[in-house]
Image (cartoon, rainbow, N blue to C red; front, side):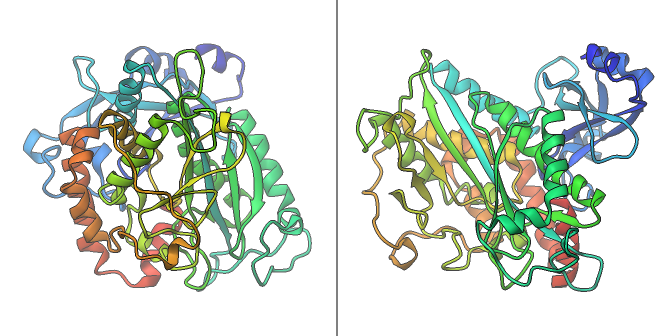
Length: 444
């Protein structure tokens, strides 16, 4: 890690940061001369900082605040090391952190540790998840009273409507995407295809699959910070909020995953298009836990506006082969690449919690040898299917009462997240729609 700073002598300051339960980067600005101290000793934040609401306020009834004297935890660097922050004017490095207790044990309220625990449980069984994420986002001109698509820097014109998979939509913001891809390479975020999506100024970028699940989650978290930052450098906003426009589709975060054994063989593959018993168990686990995990897939008030029939945001609990109307899609192609695409989550998720919830659900399906119901065919939106929670309070209640979530996450993290969301529900009720959009636009 020290070598990186030696090779980047222009860096004068560093940011040290960790993800809180809402996926917000919480941290400090540190002069680069203190970098060695941070690397050796870590730094300290109050435990309560990992459990703030979306406004950055303390959770009023949290035992992490006054009841415990608002004590400090120890933040240590992850194995990611220093990364450039290309969206800032001054050369700056980011050092991602995660939280531990004074005695060196992980703080169970840290979402990155929650994912690490799930990954370890897979590895202990000789299974190695392989994951990828696809993130949709909007480029937005938020300089006026109403949100609009930004004018193209090339033509000065605003694209009036959707233009799915249109090269001209990508070319209109070519400098932005060129800078974004260059920045991803500098930050070691492996990105693949970019496409225009079905909303005005809406795009999707796929992150490359990897069997390093923590890196995939890190990349997804960092990518969201990066996209927002690069967009501001270009004079507009980028937002991953689930539903910025009433009349246009919401933004999702689809996750693909398969499972390897210790020799690198895909255990979802049985040599046929059907998939193996382990694959079917994983499907069953994801379906069973889907209502209880809804709070991880749709964590904010705005999240529930995305679930509009016919807009590729599934609300029914079902799976299908090569069918984008189902909550779980099994993509076509070679059986050797058999995988599950989880299609429920919005772009506003915390990737550590969302990936932990999905993989943890699949693991429980494998442990319990679950058999899923038959795969559906045709338009799942038109079928009479078991439904996901449709409101934020219902999702909170389902998360609290779900036995699967209690098997995936620590009691401490569950209680902290429940307190956070209940506080946000109370305060969000006081905001107008415009105020809510302003809050979520740059945060989630």
